[in-house]
Image (cartoon, rainbow over all chains, first blue to last red; front, side):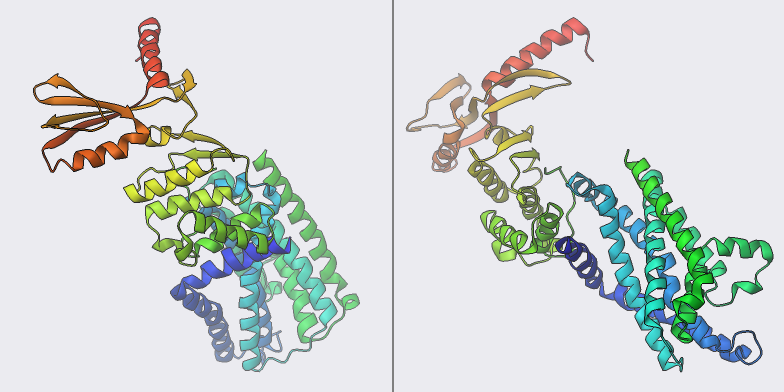
Length: 252
Length: 217
């Protein structure tokens, strides 16, 4: 299994990605630019002094760092499948003894890896901008684990949609827009109109970010974060069940 | 399986491609790398094994696809026009490699190229349905024009107007062409026809009968 992970992540993921040097450069810039945009907006508008959020930079950095998983991971898997279709390797992958579900999972891992690189870079920039991290490792890891599992579920849903519609990626588009607007990435969901807030609560991102902020900035332990933990766990389970069912349905 | 014009990853090396596909089939990285290097060497790609596939010619790509199909050492190999669109030298290498698998693998090869068909022990001629199945019997008919002179070992049969037909088995084809080349332009090769005599000849006759019977388009 580790050999396959290496094959998918290092050979087909990393080596191909790094071969497009301009793309690597531009992608890295795309990771960091939003941080600075929101940072300067925060400075300009005086967030932290007059708003509900005491440290807007820290709020925004955690949001931006982990939002990428939600939107880009979905794009990564869906784009990967589409790309395999175009270059003609999808049939060969599907003809291999690897089960389609396992194939999707291995593909997803690369998406998680590349978004982890993005998250680490954003968190490091945050430190440079003065964010003080007080990390509770256990609760951070727990929230991260559940969040990533929910992303795998979303990936499977996106993969099944791409296999069905062949073109475009409606799920990726939705998650990208939804996560920015509704996930509490750069502003708290409490300021949204009530009806939009309910949609926001159906996203694992919303609960994951709340939990991660508390765990990474305020050193909150799991017992203090149960209010965020159980909705995240339920949503993760739901995403996974829907994702696995969609893929199996598609394969059948 | 080597589907015609199927993809490999262009921006990684041939070895990396093969290791990746080997891992899909459950080979360990160490096994996959060793097998990849061995196959690439056997297929004449050893010196370019670590180059990006994007720098490969079509012929090299075909050989890489065959190597990929052999990574997990399958008993049966399905080849779809494995020498399609490649130059003569590359074609020669690929055909020789496929020939070297004789007795080791069962190969099912779809083709309308006589040189590929020549590799077969059994030829199945298909046009909408199986029309004929028979042991392959390969004959080359070379139509030449000019002063044939002495074609030692070959029988040139005159068909009038300075034209001759030389019929030989396909394994002596290269020898015949070399002999003709030595005539320094005194003859011109007008046409070359390779027949898998038993299968295709019978099949064509059968097809004509069927067309009349069933009103095929």
